[in-house]
Length: 176
Image 1 (cartoon, rainbow, N blue to C red):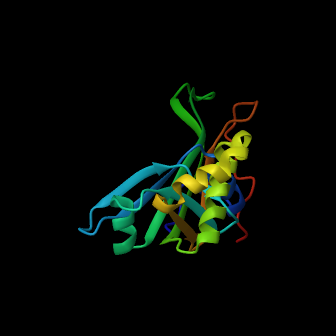
Image 2: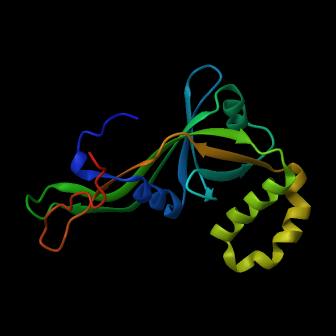
């Protein structure tokens, strides 16, 4: 991954995983078979520190991209807040963000597919899990599930101000 210019804003992998896990959606960037970029915001669920899942139709541009070139990039922003710089009155933005590189694969194993869908439902509709089994019976046969396995540690970045108006530096600096 490229070196970050503003290293004082760089955050470690655990921070990045937290952003990826809390963001309401994550943008998945892929490469089309013709070499052009394709990016789409998705609702992902995280299984562990390396594994994410999303679901989609069993055919379409996402699956075409993955079949041609399975290396993908995830990006997410959370706590995004336009603000006025406390020291210089500049127009700026406070944020938390993350980027991760991974390999996408269509899940073929039915047990893993159901568990991935369960993770997605638990993340986005936890109060409706009593209908999960019925929903699976109705939709499993025409739903694709994609697993993204991170191929390197994710990187986080943040810009936030403390109570004195100073920009916070990295809490989780990487060891040098």
